[in-house]
Length: 177
Image (cartoon, rainbow, N blue to C red; front, top):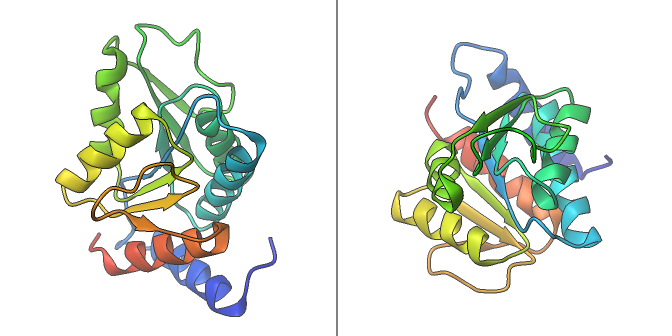
């Protein structure tokens, strides 16, 4: 993608960090509805692609919609897509996952997605997304929201994909390894 110079430079700094000993070993969570529309899915794919190119893994719920778009973006960006599935098997896993974790926990798996992530990129909204956002906020995880339908106190609303990426990268560069 063609990003402004400041964002391109920040993504390059993150990529350099990810190649060294101070790299982040935890993923970025990309969360959103399993039935997300074309706009939110395109945004999720682009965010995941850029993060993957910068050396970040992503974690999601592992199924369709935003989760599949993020997984596809991560894989096409040369990265790792981790899916934490609600079922006891991987039959409903999207085909772009690098790793599919079948939990048998149902929607309680949302807590695992939120807990495992360094920060959360919420793209689109539904009840599952809200639960992941709320848990992330409770645990002090930075939460950034694009195309959300409910504002939660502490979640940072962003205007577009570039704003989402800029805020994610700033947060990642500020977080200790």
